[in-house]
Image (cartoon, rainbow, N blue to C red; front, side):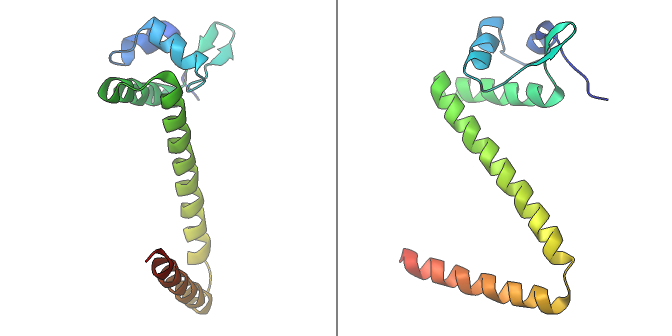
Length: 118
């Protein structure tokens, strides 16, 4: 079962998070509360995301539009990592011969890529 946190709970759990800053993050669409019968609420993943946002904003003094871009890049990276993990599991399920051909092809593509960067 998913645990939801109210705005008050989120602000008390995320270091350095204030109500105005939370509102700014929501308006910048870098975090999106879910609608519940009790009003807007946040999931556990939102708390981690908010802590990262606060840390980035504090450490690098990033404005909201920059935070939005950074979070978009982080989201894309996380998606790519998930895709890579699934691909690796699919390849691992293939017979040795297929895995060997894939490995050889990947090595040759990487060599071509490295040579083209020189």
